[in-house]
Image (cartoon, rainbow, N blue to C red; front, top):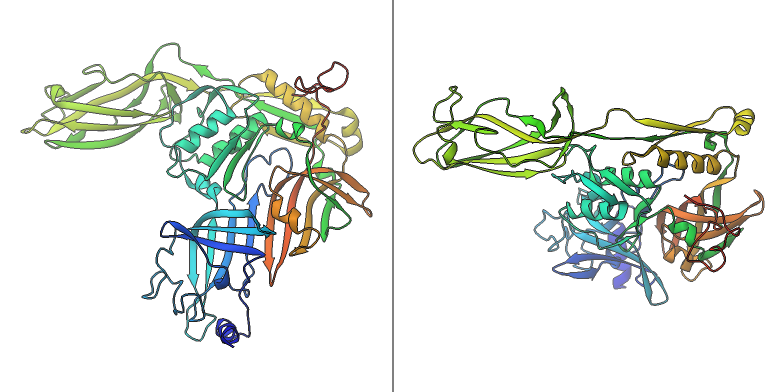
Length: 521
């Protein structure tokens, strides 16, 4: 009777809506230092939805989109707290710790084993107003990729001779929060220079992930358990383990054989750099700064091309400012003097493309006027990009010219661009059946339940479909998932065809022999 009354309260006035029953899956909030189960408060009237990973496929699909979890909580007296407004953070009855920034996670059980499909932080809370309304709170949470999409780089130095896995560690280390865990493959490319084409006020951590992954043909995404992953382009070549076989048992599939997915003219673009041989002025004070007695002023200086002041550049081997050579402070405005140089302390935090400088006037009697200041270093310039073009005449004859411009921002070697263009032309010049999505649906303990619970980006599926004649292996790039009452899950997977597995491998008993495998890149 109590449960019936609770369900009526939850559904009032729009009819009965039942809470999800723990066991098939679980929703949890991180409150007061511990994970608290809230599944019984999740409303079925708004079906929870999850998106994760790379939402598509193709040569430029290298980094994940923001992962999102959306669901609704019971805000009536029928919730687990028995309080109206329990999930309205501004309410007198608000649940302690529940607010923007709170962590949330969701898992699917296979037997007693939980498989986490989402972990992130709440970014939006929308209580439904009106005492005779639905009495629910719609909640939106984002995964760590969301934080990467918003974090602007903060004075990270130019990186030299670094692989993509090392760049990921550097960029993530620049962020306020850390992911739940990381899994970085060893990058196959060493970039002579990286983070040298960025701007602190504009470039996000996710943008760097995309640029780096595109420069070495890797992947960056987050798994459902919160692990931030970098896959090298060799990872999937070596991964022959198939999670599951789907043979005519999918709910739906989108299989495309389109000329729009053919590329028979590949333009691989690399970006050679030019570096000053001697230090030069990269930033200059434009207007006198007044600094009060025993006071400080902090300013940001952005590096610019000395030959073209409107062009932003990066710098390396930056020089600590020297009195009179690089700065002057006077007790009188406008005289260009230096009588207070001895009272001026300068603290500089150098970054790749800007520096944060704090000026402190230690004089107790006089206001200081900073009339001259500059920052010197060796500028790094990207003037002329290099395109290597690879064409397939047969494909062009059959399908017309289909061009792909493939940018590699951290590659400065045109020879590397050539190898990329050659490989991409092999992969995309011919017509092929390319399944964009496949949809699986299952009840608890149904035929696809374990597959849906375990399937994550980077895992391999064998898919066969009679009508299209499809039969091949594919890797999951990302997925959308909807939770339907009472215990049904529908998952739409974004797929990419598995690369050839017969590349030469020195660590393989068979493919390590000459003549048994083909050269990779």
